[in-house]
Length: 269
Image (cartoon, rainbow, N blue to C red):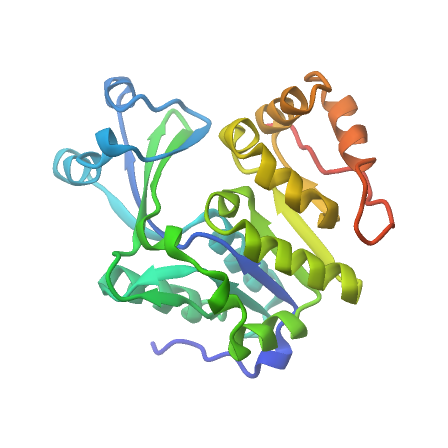
């Protein structure tokens, strides 16, 4: 069936900015995880040593190709909950290729207004999803997703979507790509008294991207994270690893808008 076309940009209530990736999912054995240095309940960015993994995985295991990327997945679920086509929008960078077309078809088919920047030379990003015993490990090869530029955010099309939306959501993974875009979003949200939601996403964000994370935190109204991410955030900030302490101290961080946010949702599991 043809994609469900969103009504108008004015229908947008929630917009997400993130890394659109095509998930390559497979149920694997422990030796596969060990070979690639992957840990369950974790996410990492692919290094040169991981580049052969995607083709090898497709050859050695039954794989599923699934439209993914943490933020895009969250937006698609939110769209399903909200129901009305065009209630949500998603922005990120894909390649001008078949995988990028698949991602756009999947998002629009769900009623999401997919407003991608399309890179002419870099292929659409992929993410290996290694599943074992009900848990998973993610190895993301960002490719085109890593090429997002704030100039795309500044276009009239994206500005219209951002202006219409009341809620902005980003995964912490986008901090590895375009902190300037996230700061620009944050300033808009603070000025217009909207809501900014950020997910810590993975321990490595707190470990290696602390400065970009802290540059965005003054604009954050709701901070999401699981136990391991919250503990790593607490360690990075010198607060320790007790979840209740981390949540309260995060909630007390200065806000650009001046109004303190509610305590962050830091769910177990």
